[in-house]
Length: 198
Image 1 (tube, rainbow, N blue to C red):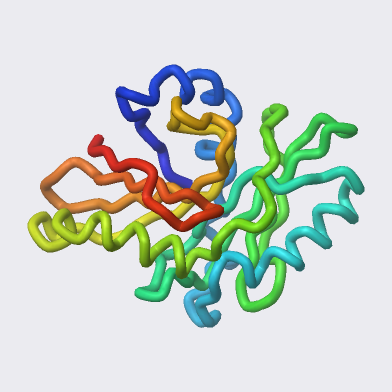
Image 2 (spheres, rainbow, N blue to C red):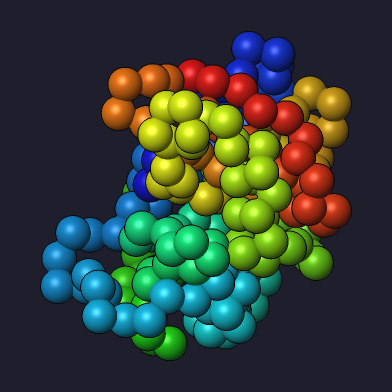
């Protein structure tokens, strides 16, 4: 998983959610093992949601989705061979991550640290639509700096003082010799909410 810096103008909101966000970002990482899925076909994030949700509610009936991130490199269409889904159960006071590839669960792990994270709002746009919006906003960065999209993550309540309760996609574009560019896309409307470098 990625390590996300905080935009200066959104520091207050990010500080409110840092414990939950950092736990997900730093601990929700697939093991670099035989679970790699280079031969598996890429799929958009929503395509794995039903299986991840089924596994999560079997683990805990009150489990809800709090975080989604690509676990392997993204293709041009916003698809990846592997996606990670993080769920939280209030009754268990635990969070558990499932990583999916090829229509199957390849890893399932409890996080070492419990936290109460807000649920992702329903009706979020899929990774392909979020990528299209993000790439339009990062077009100059990609052209001028040789930037490429490395990470897409979906979560609620981070990096936005104006609407700290919003569910958003955050797209991270990296370049060899330039600070990364972050593009936040509203997961309901598909509109770019903000961009920053860091």
